[in-house]
Image 1 (cartoon, rainbow over the protein chains, first blue to last red):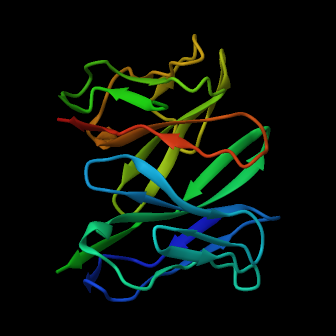
Image 2: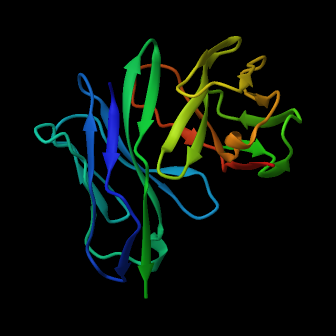
Length: 114
Length: 114
């Protein structure tokens, strides 16, 4: 079946450190891949996405590349800020039965300290 | 402003007391979904609706009901809540079709069942 596996958190970093959050997926066919971010007390917001192999999604300094050969979509940022503290969810989307279904990973909490 | 709204945002109730969480979107989206978010499990889909009067079970539908009488509204009903339904609930909506349509999330409803 379709599934998403993320590295367990929490991830604790100092400001300006490099961030990597690993995400791998299992799916048939060619799903679209997403990273969502959830700031404290808020709903999920789309951070970036990639819809085909080798696509790179980017937004707010975050990047992730769709790697079909390794079935991965790792999230990276070169220099994190305190305001990046949030929970990050990797997700895949499959069109099945007339419906676009999102399947989420467990989420990774990021805490950035000054 | 395009948005998904949920009410209430916080609710504490007791076992067996029926409750309804409302969800409304102003984007004329066909698809709407309910998810629950639990630590270590990410978001899991409870029910979804592809249009008015069309609903179907997601991955964890037991103990929940939904209805879709109007396009904009998709209430979640717990007929007899139990403590294992204590969770954070999110409503989401998106346009129909296989295209690259973003899913918009509400702010969440934190439910505690005593």
